[in-house]
Length: 292
Image (cartoon, rainbow, N blue to C red; front, side):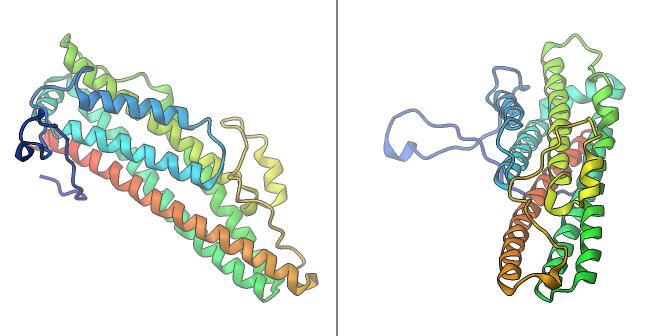
């Protein structure tokens, strides 16, 4: 058994109206293989649809965190399904390469989000250093921080290239005529595609936020064709050049704006961490299908 992050999962199964003593909620797992009519698989499909609709929202930090939260919910629902013995039996009985391919995809997600998590931490630290430089009107230090911030967000944007193989590869199939097994694998394919698409959008939005990009780099970013070049709404409007010529009031305004951005980065960091853990849990559950 491979260890994983613990979280409590329960499924409400309301009792019929009777005596008050029997109105207490009961939590059980389904004993049948999930299918389109099963509440668990239906919830997963609804969450995938909800995640896909998220991409059309306004580009704010709240919107970005909402996307990460929806992504986490999708992974948690899939993890619930993978705990069902019938689901595990179906995956073990499928074509030999199915589980291995799904494991490979989730390993890629875990690796990419591990890098993403580290980059977000670095972004917050470098932005904090830039804020100190602003308060001290240190143009040299500010220029160094701006260069480092630009490098970090460009690396975040490059994470999208990791998903090329997923976007181009055909969905895995179970090699079986069993309808329920095919529907389970089909749902897992949808999770893979939705995760790649949502992650690519998140990386692109952060990467193209003007608060972290130098002007020359912003012009170069227009040549990238993978995603519309729009950043996060709150991450703009900073000018860290010629600090020594700014008035004290201008420095205070800039510093206050930077503190607001730092707080938002901290919230994003928390959302990334939760999404990252949900990905790890899904991969561990898939790995246990093979090892138990």
